Amino acid sequence: MSVAFELTNTSGRSVKLADAFAEEFVGWLARPADEVDAEYVDGGRLLDLVGSAAALGERARRGDQAAAFTQQYLLGKLYELSMQLPSTPNAEGSVAVQALVRQLEKDTVRDQDSYIDHELISASPESPDEFVSWLKSLIRSHRVFKHPYWHEFMRNEATPADLRHFVLQESSVDARFDDLLALMQVGTDGATKMEIASNYWDEMGNGQPEQVHTVLFQHIIDHFEITDQELKENLSTSALLGGNLAVLVCRYRSFFSEAVGHLAVAEWLAPDRFAQVLHAWRRLDLPPKGIIYHELHIGIDAHHASAWFAHVVKPLAGDPAARRAIARGALWRADSSARYLDGILDESR
Image 1 (cartoon, one colour):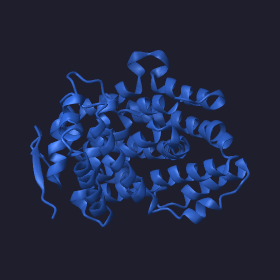
Image 2: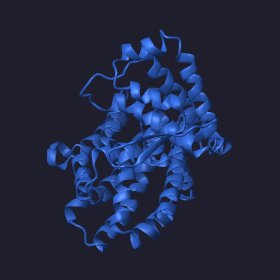
Image 3: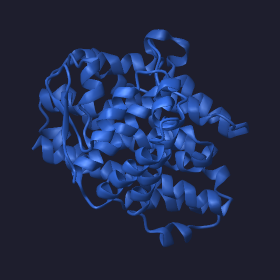
Image 4: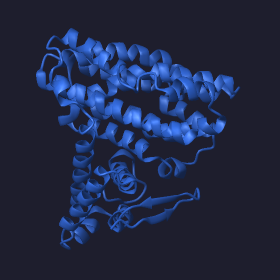
């Protein structure tokens, strides 16, 4: 039986977790790794912990929305241990944390793969040039391409409150894209490493601290007076999933090709999407400083998308396994983004 527990945050919103084990384990994350392992590993509770996560994942697979939220919320909390500098001791490095992360990741990958036509991606063209064209056509035919959230709602209907909600949800990826690139480049070389480095340097404002893209993104967060607590505790299930998928594919070398496909879709679709945000911002006559991030990325991401396909996707595409993995990662991004946009559109209207 699934029982909901509520953690009330400072913004007044209740974060509902579907299982007591998840609520309990979140409470252990602010303790040193040795203490966590003394409780769960030495204390003989590790198998129960992993089993509870597996049961949670099974309910999420069957459509239990509370379980799906808890799964992605917990995975996001665990990823924070290795994606943020701590101010106090935390559980990073714990054996129990790693075991739990592994189970949550396995279930997340399984669920994302369930949306994919694997025969389709196995039949992708062998020629790298033809593969790039095929991959672009695949995404053009996907319902995420020109999604009505952007071209109807954001462009013509969104209010300032809608934009605030949008920025809050988008923070799951946009606020840390530079770190994702830094993770992704480990182990690469040649033209691929240089392209990732070029992308990263643009994210770093080409050496100008005030132009660093996370700083620019902070301007729009500041405009809407979004607090750090809201950023941590008010993401939807689909927004959490989007952020977690980006971390998952970028942190593991075994998922490098999936990361290539994932970021190819993100970079390629961003200019058109951000153009709709810019149009809405100007339609609402909001302060220009707040939209610098999106305005800048319209041109930058168009350039990066073209270079990404040429210098990262194409060189890998001569290998059949890499082609399948690139397409897999691209569809993970497209499918999860489409569900996210469906949800935020329904919620906004």
